[in-house]
Amino acid sequence: MFDHPDYDSHEKVLMVEDAESGLKAIIAVHSTALGAAAGGCRLWTYDSPGAALSDALRLSRGMSYKNAMANLPMGGGKAVILGSVPAEKRTAVMQAFGRAVDSLNGQYITAEDVGVSVSDMEIVATTTKHVGGLAAGAGKSGGDPSPYTARGVRVGIESAVHAKMGRRELAGLSVAVQGLGHVGMYLCEELYHLGANLIVADINPARVSEAQARFGAVGVSVDDILTQAVDIVAPCALGSTITEYAARYIRAGIVAGAANNQLATAEAGRILAERGILYAPDYVINAGGIIMVQGELSGDNDTAVVTAKVDAIGDRLDAIFKRAVSDNVITNEVADAMARDKLNAAWAKPSAMGEKRALSRT
Ligand code: NAI
Image (cartoon, rainbow, N blue to C red; front, top):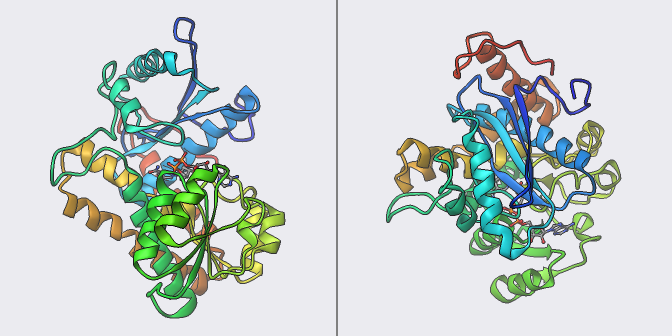
């Protein structure tokens, strides 16, 4: 574990197996230096347990960076549930997952991610209180974080358009949206109302049909979505879709979307930059959902307050894009440096969870 390529001095990695429900899960706590490690729970059928471990390690580190950059008093963590869960076992699996979260005594706070819904988190909440993304009352934010994530991505796209084209208006621009899940569909809605033209793809044809019917989107195959002749590519499916190969063939001037860990390799980021393609660092642009969850957990969750915090994602990206130009450094490296500075400052102090820890090796 300590030599694993994705291990980054994670504070804790919990392997969970519950024989009764069949739950197999990994909970990775990357850092509690800034507060309890918060990050969603992903349910996915991985090619191997090793792939699940890599995902948990990478995603939890990304959450430390995301929460630090969003100025949230929270550290970074993530959970993955392995395999497909039969419908009749779902409640038992979510209850068992909640018990595992609870065993960490608040060091990790969970919420929704890919494959997991608000109703799942309502079940998790029956066995642990360390959970966000639950339904909220009128005028308060809570429940599904995806609309907030989508709003932040839309604001981030406007910021990228400003940096690249000197305007913020999206009317008449074309956007290729990869993945029409919770976030992708809400993003299409935001973009459609602002007059953008949509090209979409999803492995689920029903989602494509819905986007065609609601937003006049043009559906294309999942193999062709990234290389469309559009202004913006918005990856909103799973991570690592911007491979070095894809980076060489993308025709858009901007890559800005919701997916975590969009760049398959650091080299893919460099190829985008060399080709003059502006990349919005994923963990900065997609922080809307966790901003909402933090509001919900802290009780400071008036919708207007949370929305204003989400909209500040645009200011942060404006600053990153400016610094990338002034320092001649690529955007994701600017963001990484800013996030590491914040984490290292916190790591130098006793951690918020009462432990002293070493500086990150990243
Ligand atoms: P989701 O599971 O609702 O949607 C993912 C969609 O991508 C599904 O419709 C799926 O069919 C589609 N898909 C999968 N592989 C594909 C491929 N190769 N090509 C095209 N479509 C494909 O997930 P959700 O919640 O919408 O999240 C999307 C991404 O955004 C994920 O990477 C997630 O980690 C990230 N994210 C989500 C947040 C949220 O608030 N839900 C917050 C921050 C990041």
